[in-house]
Image 1 (cartoon, rainbow, N blue to C red):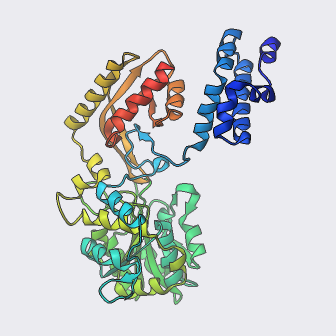
Image 2 (image 1 turned 120 degrees about the vertical axis):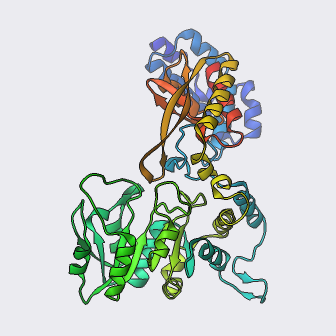
Image 3 (image 1 turned 90 degrees about the vertical axis):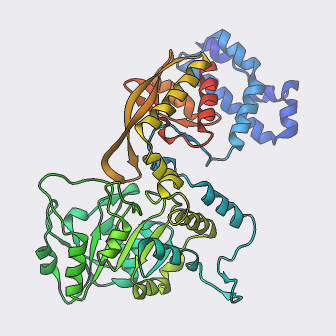
Length: 458
């Protein structure tokens, strides 16, 4: 093994070789130096792990300029880039949640490539409000009196509590003390908003009488938090949205609801935003990049007088959204009121609405393409995947996946695909790599094949 280590070239001697001259002419010397050291460190690690013999090292050393050039290009790539989602999870939080519709992408490009009327009223020629671009559309879709948008749902809840409940008691069921991604918890958000948390009921059951008994002179609101990232079953119950709104109003209190993932269409087993508004909730908050299918945003809809207070609060500026998010959100909301309808026009809803026949066709086409590569075998298997993104807890959508039969282990192949020129994220199922075509977007089929060919050929 010591002889193998001694066969590794010295960095400074390599840089004096003529074969490295082209790289030094087109790159900073320190960058080439760093890339070369990285490649040699990898060879040293291969020796330590027993993955390199003298023949392998001789081949790699002869290819050093090529390896260094590849490492340089790797370092110049964007950190945030497109990946192929072959997991079958439509709202994969780690992979950016909902993909945008083509109309939303075009809208973002249009406002990002130049100037826009973000805060300018083209009709009157005076300063306008960025909220005006989507508030009317949101009201049209949800039936609310008014609406505004901030940068995510946690910010929406924080702004709502800061503007309306600072120093006052807000009553919440113990069964709704949820924690969302990144360890953000409802009690913590309430504390930051300056509201005083008043827990009522038990973990599994909360009754109307529990809310009534908690009302004091300092109570300002009842807050209902939809448990969108888990589901409580068995001996459990909670106060309905309509009952809570009526009860709160009977005491002269506000009825507020955090709907979490938020959905604007029925048929998926989730309470819709329209239902919460119609039930009498004064304010409802929800996310833009989950079941709505748009960009990351926190949407607030409800009573006009309360929305007005939120817009005037100093925190509103700190959590406001930018022009590109607004453009994507407006274009996404337009899909709910025009054309073929959201279930077909909004990518995440279309993905969730695919029939078993459609999914089998997708899996068959992908399986055939993989077999045609001639590098491994594949077969179609039944599988299921959750929605992800803290939405529809306990629900898995059945479908069909393509399982690989390869001499390379599933763990190794999965890792190599993540490092491919076009990264692919897949699942490991029964010790085999599984591609679920449900979440392949336009062009992903060919990218997946190119990456698979790249890693198997190597």
